[in-house]
Image (cartoon, protein in one colour):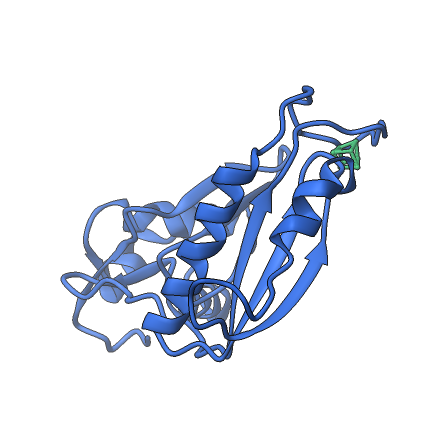
Amino acid sequence: MSVTDTRDWVCGIDVLDMRLDSEHQLLFNPAGRGGVVVVNEPGHRIFRLFHRPTSMRDVWVSCPEPGHDLQDVVTRLSQLDVIHPIGHPPEPAFPSGKVLTAWLHVTNACNLRCPYCYVNKSAEGMDESVGRAAVEAVIQSAVAHGFPAVKLKYAGGEASLNHRLMMSLTPTRGHSQPAPDWICKRSC
Ligand code: SF4
């Protein structure tokens, strides 16, 4: 995007705009193909100009000190899909994968006390019928969409506190569905 661009641009409707501290904001468009960007106050002021459709020329006029920084910020915001030409929102692009990964939250219980923990712990655990139904659904989805492998990640809580379920869900060739290859992992 350059100053000669005549299109109107606008910020994405899903853009996350989060204050980090008194001088910095985080911007991220989950519907875009870019990543997270942190902007300072001048950068954030430029971003806010796109809360309504605006052209590069208008931005240039509105900015008290237009220059290379302005050009750089606007270019970066457009590359990250934080702003887009009006009527042309970004379309999420997903890398093609060979493994369908599913997380199974097999228990809410945990015997650790990590300071960063966000899990609402309880003695509750997934029962076997739910676990089997979930695995069958994952297999069906993998087969339907041509994934040659499935990765099951056991999560919690501390997943091994429900190790009986983990063991019973460990797939065998006797599964009712034509199973792809398996990768099983335990994760917090
Ligand atoms: S659930 Fe995970 S993060 Fe929370 S205390 Fe247990 S091990 Fe730590």
